[in-house]
Image (cartoon, rainbow, N blue to C red; front, side, top):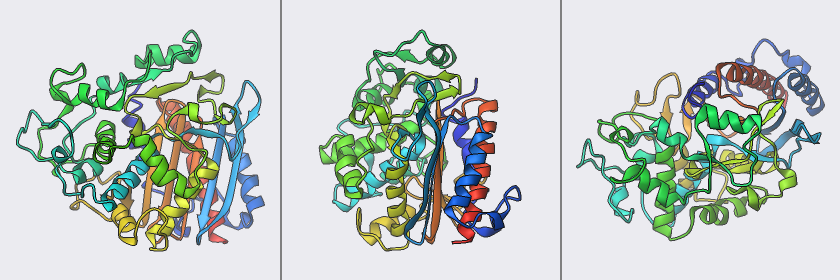
Length: 415
C-alpha cells in the first residue's frame, strides 16, 4: 500500500499538469460538438459517472464571472441510498492549502507579517533546522514548499486518527488501522502537534524532518510545513486558525456549509468516504488539519473558485486588495525549482503551469482537483468521495477525472 499522503499528490499533479480548459486540450474521447448545453453536459457526465468507481461526484464550471454549470451525481451514502447533492459536504484534501494561502495573504494585508518575515519573528519558540542551525526560514519558503522542513511519512501518518465513537471493527476501519497504522483517539491541538514534530524532545522529532539544503534552494512538498504556515497566522493574530478562516474567508464569500470540524456541519449533508463502493471508511481527522481537512460542498467551493478567478483578473475586492490577489498567483520561485513534471512555478501554495492555476486534493476516500486559467476566464473543479490511495484506485480516479475534464472542456468551448 503506497504512501497516500505523497504519491497521490504527485500523480494528481501529473494529471492536472497535462490538462486545461483550453479548447486545444480537449481529449478525443469526447465529441466537442455534442456538448452545447448544460443538459448535454449532464447527460455526458451522468454516463461517465455510471461507468466509474466513484460513489458520488460533484462538478462546477465557471466562465466569464458566472457559474455556468453545477451538478452532482451518485450517492453521498450508498448504504442509506442518500444522493450526493450540491449541498453535500466532504473533505477536499490538499485543496485546503488554498485556504491557508488566503489566510496568509489576509494576514499580510492586515500588517501582521510579510512574505519576507523570518518565521522565528512570529513563533513563540524559535524553530531551527538542526542540519543548518543558522538558516533563516521565511514565510515565503513555507508557502512555496522550499523551507527545508520535510514530511517524514511515518510521523505524518500518526497525525491521522479515527475519531472517538467510530466503530473500528468495520472493514473500512481495519483498512486504516492495519494498512496505514491509523489509530482511534482524540485530536491533538495544532500547536502541540507542531511542537512534537519540530522541537527537540517531541515524540515525533527527528533529523529526518529536516532537509540539509538551505531554505529557498530545493522544493519538497510538505503538509506539515503548510500547517506551520497556518499556525503563524494563528500566533500573529491571536485568533484560532479555524476562526480566522471562517471570519476572514468563508463568511465574506457566503460559504456557510464549509468548516474544518465536521461537527459544525449538518451531519445529514455529509458524504460518506469510501475505500471502494462496498467499503465505507470511518470518520477520521488529522492533527495537521490546515493542510487538508476543510470540508465543503459543490455550492460553497464554487463561490471560492469564482472569487479566485475574479481576483486573478483584478476584478474582486471581496477578500483582499488587487495587490493581495496578485500576490496569491505571482510566481515566487526561480525557474527550475518546482519539478518540471508538476508545474512551472509556485504562487502562495497555488501551482502555476502554463496558462493554468491549480491545486488538487487526495486523502483516504476523497479525491478532487480544481483548476482555472490565469486570465480568470474559465475554470472548474471535480469532487469525489472515492479513494486514490492505491495504484488501482488512482488509475480509476484518473480515468474518471480525464473524462470529466474532456467533457467540461468541450462544454466551455461552446459558451
